[in-house]
Length: 249
Image 1 (cartoon, one colour):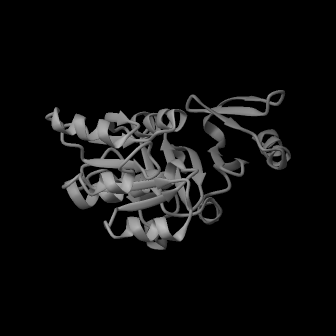
Image 2 (cartoon, rainbow, N blue to C red):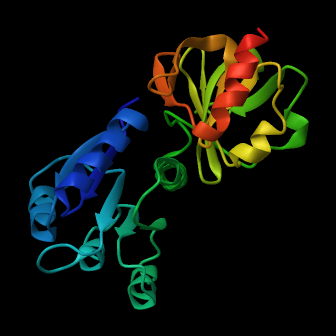
């Protein structure tokens, strides 16, 4: 399967770099092009054979047209608007184009992933590098495993003991397994934690739970630990409980 191509249009260079990092490193897609103004995008479209599968458009671009005006000219390309202006008249103007998403900065990684994948699912099917699972259903959880959907939409049996890191971003959680597969669930970390076995998992930070048996190292001096090669901060309010759990192993 060819990699999914995403067009980024963002006039803040630092945020453009951050978006590119998220799209390529975290989501596994390819950035087809990254421009900071509408005319550069239109020139690129006119001279390339690449058809973007999705466009992430900043609304407040330099010059004219702005991101909404540009979107009107990008026929056949699903649009997700990103803006720092959380004002009603801009939202109502953008809404007329029926975008697949409207995100107000700052942009959470999992929020962006969920909206991007939802847009792609509507346009190119379900063969995606990651699958955003819907809110967890009780019947999918069993004593020592959970069923999660893979990129093909198939339910995969994932043992709790194979889950290494759970990272929270608002109402979404990313689960990284021992073999480095990643699954996104639409569920808060607090609710998910209530359904996981205490014997395996411990909360290390307000945004992280870890499998205590997969910890590679722990450093009290710099308040970090490592699981599956990923460095995770230890929150001050979680440190005592974490250390107590380690003493009981």
